[in-house]
Image (tube, rainbow, N blue to C red; front, side, top):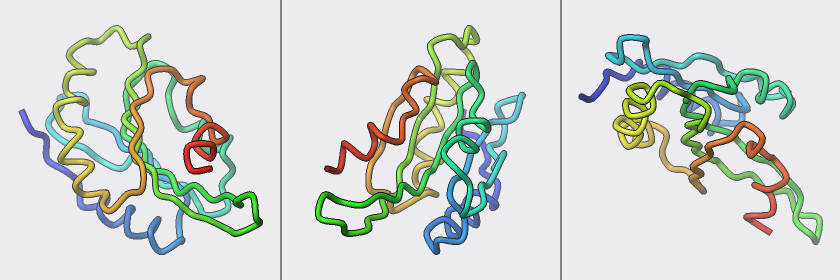
Length: 134
């Protein structure tokens, strides 16, 4: 079943694209009927702030504006879409609902530069993402 998407997801993504916000944490409702923005991180938020808004044992859709410097000193910015579905989440129905709605959420968060599937909170690593582009 496809969930209804809150308009705040599109608005939040637009804020990230315009460099007004740093990240967005997107959550499904408990009845799996809707998807809404759970948290929109301020532009000056740290990566630690981002991690603190991602639960260790519950799936989420994540959008992150990764800023870094290349080897020759150029500033870069890449928009990431992350399907976070931790292995330690024991609710199979919840994980299935996220997997089932991934494409419609991703369509609202377009265009992106890179997509990740992450199944462990410890793998949410800014450095490993930077290395993907280096």
